[in-house]
Image (cartoon, rainbow, N blue to C red):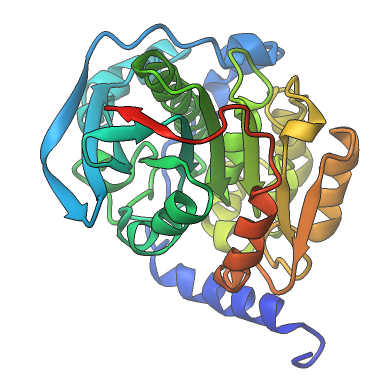
Length: 348
């Protein structure tokens, strides 16, 4: 223990304070009065099924390391906003966000029978770290191909005007925040369908932090992935806004708009994200949670875990930002997930 906190909580607290250097700009666009279309909408209407992707481009050059090839694929996001006012921003100032990207790792000229989709965390600019660490490990240890899906407002999807990657994904502009989540879920499910059409027999989804939240939501709506591994995540959104140090700017701006804690809770209670229930079988889920998470408290993870009928869960030591030390344990646990394809590869 370090003082009253464990090392995981201590690291999370330090990073939370450092994040204030990023979130200096206030959000001045109060869209809380535009939330009516989202209130009371069932989760399968809030997150509608994706149409088939009409065109996916395989972008060259490709990065090759031995028999492993990493290439970029791109497609036009099929997301349709619920808010008429937001549609103008979506197709205008945010036009760069209309193209979605993924980095796809597979064998040269061949593919495995199984694919794992990975969704990164908030504020990550690109997939370089994962391409050097997580993705090769999953590729090697699990015998699956891997594709890293880029979130809206991050990396190559960043509109002009953002101060940093992901700045506009989750803010006090509540319509934009909800539409960012909806678009992320649509993009992940769209490319999941494309990979199935491409020939993969099995497609699972995993994600970290914000990516873990997106992963959880894909377990609540059909068509479903074959399995999900949400890592360091929960859907108790109101509590995260109230407690997570890294979300201080969103909380402060909402208060400046006159939206106090009871009003914030009432808003998110009326949007079917926090209350979304899984339709994917519990044995096809593997949760990864940190006992000393300073952002997404363990007791809130347990609260949702019980509501989701207690799927298999791996508790790791440390906190939110010290997650990498547990990667070998996570990979070992993922080997036990149901795999129906029996391995092997076929021409790509």
